[in-house]
Image (cartoon, rainbow, N blue to C red; front, side):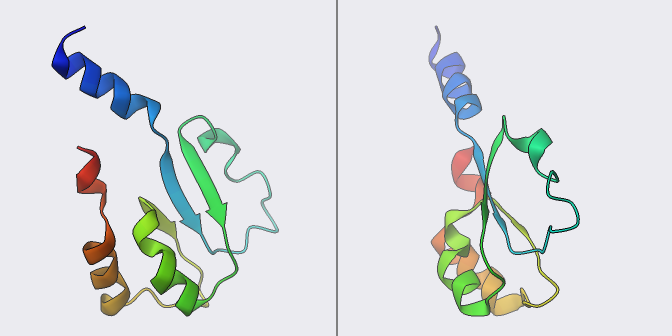
Length: 86
């Protein structure tokens, strides 16, 4: 296996991490189709938790109760981003 193939293979094995703070009570199976490619972490909607944890995730499914404003997104940029994976 070439070095490039090895890197691509390793990337494909790693699951994306998605932070969910949306209320999915009405659609409990919402994430079933993503199970093979993503780890979904559902947490209660809370701005402090979002600020503390957003750097651990590749994506964020927003809650209407928590505002992901510029300061939250800047914090994400300082603590981690999808670009590290490529």
